Image (cartoon, rainbow, N blue to C red):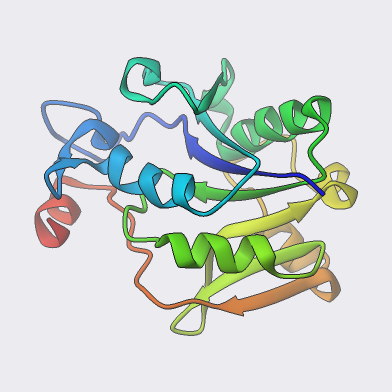
Length: 185
């Protein structure tokens, strides 16, 4: 089975008020994007994919990462997920593990735990709460939403029988605002 790691990075980051897009904001000596990208690259995926949209991030990404442009990024997270799944299907991957580029504290160990877990829908849990990364086997791709700002959470509600949880250490905080950046930097 080949599995791709997917980092969703297409949103406008409209709640972040700063001199740059939130993913390019300085964080931990690099950027929020770099901090989120490093662990997924270390986790052992067959391919690492970054879905971009509102901002062209391609020049900020290393050459070993597949960059997909979501031209419909304004339709919400579901369109980015669909972009990744469509690519993964044509590339021959049998599953994807999806995370968010504004979560710089998700460790390589968390990505790897979800990658290695058995199940068609596998989600990390941090302190008892379901959070990305989430593994989605190709059998569930047709069940994913086509519109809106939700991805795998739709499956959590509609098909709870398919969901497996993997306990992960860490804190998957989002960087959504300038205050978040200052708090966690």
